[in-house]
Image 1 (cartoon, rainbow, N blue to C red):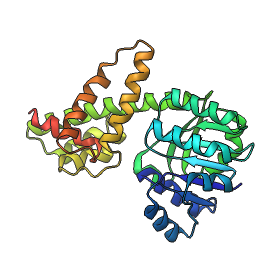
Image 2 (image 1 turned 180 degrees about the horizontal axis):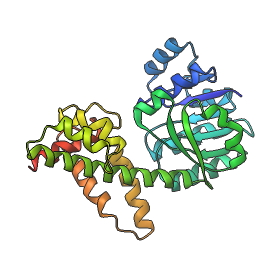
Image 3 (image 1 turned 90 degrees about the vertical axis):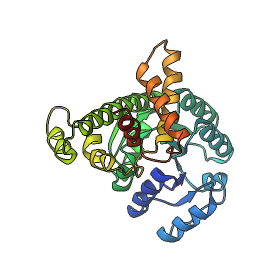
Length: 286
């Protein structure tokens, strides 16, 4: 099966490198051509100058791009040239409504669509240990599972098209809550005059321990916010979650609070920092 990959952002690059290492990748495309060419030269994998050119050459298209509009634009552009019975897997984080629209567009061309957002950040993309939540046809997923295993260590079929994105929304809301809790607690610890390395070490081993505390605690308390997951992207994801919640008549105050905090940080120029930059606000409160 020939595989093409569209989208060479921070997450996409890691996934592409792992697919190439496994000998599973045929070609790549990125809107910014020089980035595609540089990675093409590095991996000795050809790149295409348009998404349509890529779609014409492959049986499986993997997408990892930023916004709902971008996903639908790519889907609309490649649909006419995709081979019948080919497969498109979208690993972007978009709304479940967008996933359903994409599937509808492609079904008219006898192309199967899976929504398969991932979690694990840049580290997970580099290591090939992402967690993938998949909506769509399960036999299709099983057919391509060996390919997806090059980039993900946990692949779970969630149900019909759109359920992958709904599950990712759960993940993003939970990540917001963890971010709020960890940054606020560490700011409190700092205000108490505690040695923060010791605080992080002992708390990580107890009931309140979590991945975010272990992997971001020390860097945030030392004022380092190199992105594993950009704050502006989480803001975009939480806006999607907010819209989905409103359609279900749910009031989620955690989303509203985090969006306001992120907007304040983005206005200060910190949108490209890691989401742990929320610690900046919490420290200012003490």
